[in-house]
Image (cartoon, rainbow, N blue to C red; front, side):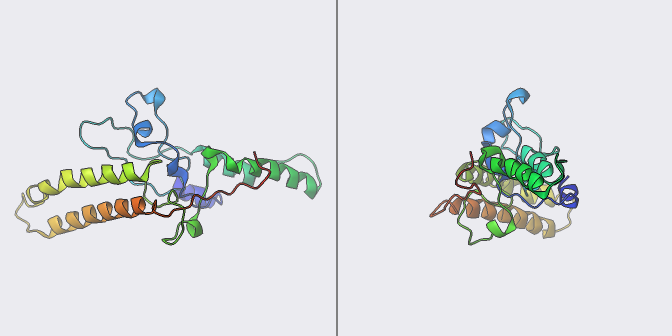
Length: 195
């Protein structure tokens, strides 16, 4: 879905995953669950929860509300034959950019020096601290099992080292995401007169 979005002209949206809490994403009642992101153009990690917690889908498999809105902007036919008519119709669609479901931040908004703590690659949920705590708990749950799991066939410790590196990177990424709340500044693409 992500790469198909690029073929339609969609850019990355690294704020798509900041709408719902982890509890809402993994709600036990499927009817009350919220999607993990408003956009398949976000980079989100696999949705894995600690043992004993409700587990929803591991991956985002459908277009999000942001994706549909961006596609509407790019492809909706407009009535009228003058360029002014199209401009007016596009401005009307774009004026919705302040709606929470349509929040947007792309590559240049998500560099390490960008101040918006909700514009991240590989984050999940609206609370970076809760995400960091959950990832840390998952890493701490799995690390003690690495040697037993990856050396059962007497192949040495190379796979253990690789798995440890993956877990360490996941823990570090989560800590980095949480640290961006210190001195962060939330950004918006809304214009002064937008609703």
